Image 1 (cartoon, rainbow, N blue to C red):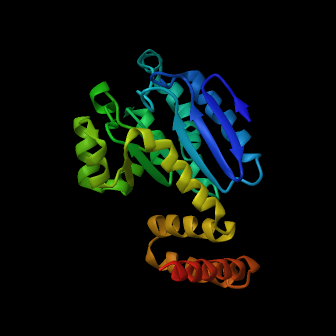
Image 2: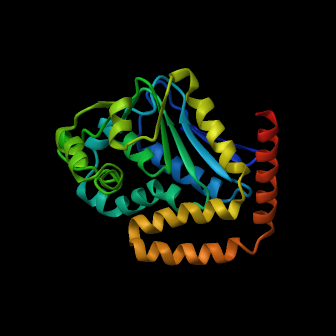
Image 3: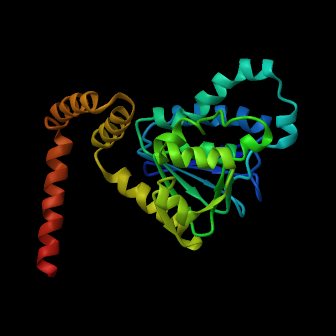
Length: 259
C-alpha cells in the first residue's frame, strides 16, 4: 500500500492499482514527478504483480502540467532532469506485466504522454485528448513525438502535435490512440475485469507476449520471430502450459454441454 500526496497504490490478488489522487484535475507539478519516481520504486519492489491498472480520481484523468511550474523551467534544468523524467514515464514498458490505463474526462499534455507508456488504454465516453505543447512554445518531450507516432502513425501524430487539436474518445479509438471505449460508469469495472483476466494467465506467457510485441515494434520482424522461437522453446516445457491447456479443455467441454 502506498498513500502519497499525488498517488495511491494497492495490490490485491496479482492486480496492482495506481491512482492519480489530486482531483479534480490531477495537475502535474514538480512534486508529482518526484513522487512518481518514489511510487515506481515502491511498485518495483512488490512481488506478485501480474497486471497493473492506472486510473485517476476526479472528473478528469489529468489536465496536464502546471503552467506556473513550466514557466520556471530553464534549459539547464531540462538538460539535467529530462532524461530522468523520460525514464519514469517509460517505466511501464520496462515491466514484465501489462499496464492498463483507464481514462476519463480531460487527458492533455503531460497527462496524455503519461498514458502513452501503458500497454492498453481504455477511455470513457466523453474523454478528450490533446497535446498543446507546440502552442506553448515547445514540442512534446515525454514520449509525445515518439510513442504517439508508433501508436497512430506519422500523419495523425503530426496533426495532433502541430495543431494541438483536441479529439474525443471515439476518434481516439478510430486512430488507435485508445483500444477500448466504454460508458463512464463502466470504466474502472472494465479495466479491472481486463486486468484480472490477464492476471489469471500464466505469468511467463504474459511476460513473453508483451516483450515479443514490444521487440517486434522496436526491432523489426526478424528480431520478433527469433524472440518467438526462444519464448516458445521455454513455454512448451513448463507445467503452466500443461495446466492451462487442461483448464481450457475443461472449459470448452463445459460450454459444449450447455449448448
